[in-house]
Length: 445
Ligand code: AMP
Ligand code: MG
Image 1 (cartoon, protein in one colour):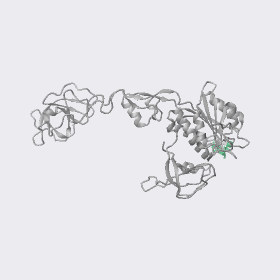
Image 2 (cartoon, protein in one colour):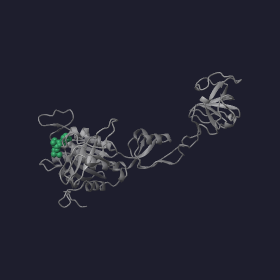
Image 3 (cartoon, protein in one colour):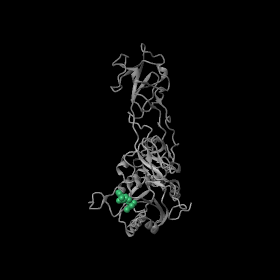
Image 4 (cartoon, helix red, strand yellow):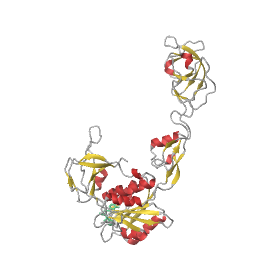
């Protein structure tokens, strides 16, 4: 596709897919691998398979608190006629057994402790009664195994060989791949990697994402607004989105609507080896919209203007860095809702790709819903409506969507409430209540 700096193909706007494909085509592949301690690896993407460094469990161990015995010794045991075994020792979790279980004996054992040699079953404490050396009961059946070690124990039920023994390697053999490259490390994956003996893993470096707000009217948090200022919503909002997408956000401040200021901040970002710079505002056709000119000066414009609502003036460029490598330049419209939607459509997939996710996992899995309220939109553009789901009594979403508080691209209050984006295709201008729509839940991958 050749789009030139204007982005229009012939005289039409780019489709969402054309623009996203062009963005992704500018990415050679994920960032380089680095080693991360598991304590810092949550949300990172594996660059290499993780191997099990130990079998799990590493040795046969007990699944119960009870007594390690030889099953043959208790084959005749019944409630009325229990079998007496001499208790010759104890093995606790974290200690190694120091003697064998010979015929007629038992070793008291805790859950997770290694099975002593020659024992072939564990009888749970609930099936035993502590006894003295002569076999007289000195406690109650089913009491816990916490008291002093009795001289003997009465076993009230026969158990089969293997009972309550977790065999070495049952859960996981040693030296197999337990997590594949490309996996995103959630809490369960981290527990698995740690539980199989890993201290650190090879993950892709988090992409460095520069965040730059623009606008003479935009004020940093806490600054007085004066007669014509507004607080910066996009800087903090886009930084949070970048982090959630798997990036490492870094602020480049707020640029004035002047080419020199913008150019200087972009150049600072390029010198800082950022993988991408996300600029908000200044990409439209106003007299002070200098972002595209600045992109062309520090690099080159790849595309501009997409058939999307909100977010039409989206711009994308690339720049070669002085220190080597390439930085993606995103120009998002300044309206906070437009910047949010275009981030979702074009920046998030790019961050996820750089962070190491496979090309098939970059955009959210679509769901289906039904509009509760009618929706209308600009012809020829794909609309992304900010919606909330109707809830049933249990709080679960009814498979419906409704149009919230108004869809203007400046309506930040509706954006904050939105749970999902409902997608209305280019081909329709309005949809009645009851119409089916495709839906992206914003809290689902
Ligand atoms: P622009 O894309 O620069 O024409 O800006 C479009 C609208 O978004 C204007 O109303 C701006 O004041 C507003 N806007 C631009 N940047 C921000 C920002 N960082 N935070 C909040 N609103 C902004
Ligand atoms: Mg502006």
